[in-house]
Length: 215
Image 1 (cartoon, rainbow, N blue to C red):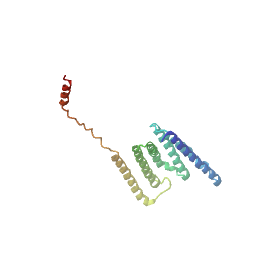
Image 2 (cartoon, rainbow, N blue to C red):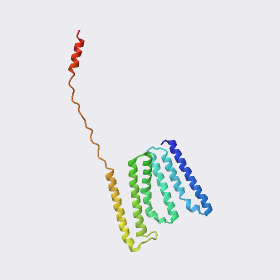
Image 3 (cartoon, rainbow, N blue to C red):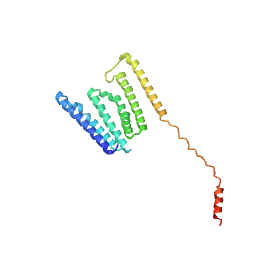
């Protein structure tokens, strides 16, 4: 895909984004929604998306950092949006896992897909899986065990939560071990050198040349 096609795709995506935001504002005017309390996270989400779009315009290696930075900004805005509509601001105690390393893995995955680097995309998928496992494990610990959000399961939680944490730890370990074996490759075999035996001199041709030179 050349730069012109990528620019057209970015323009269409931006147009769809503006269309969606405009439609949302129009609907909110009719049903009387306080947009100020709902839309402010988009001041973080939209710049992050634009930064990623700028990084995708060129497949130069240096743009990978731009895409990753845009992913961090956009994921931060998404987390803020969810926290804003749910009021669960205490979830930062474990939502950091979606930011680091989750958003970094997401940026690397999108860059690997964009450049066709399958190895980078697979490595990023492992990072995303680790982030999800950490988010779930710490979320259960803080929300259920410590009850920072007011959620408690009583006696059942004292049994279920440790089991879930053990399962998450095993899944994380297995994912890491499987990834390590999958990424190992055998060293290339040394090239085989085949020696060609020396050819005997062509005496017949020399004899014919001598006859031709005689008067």
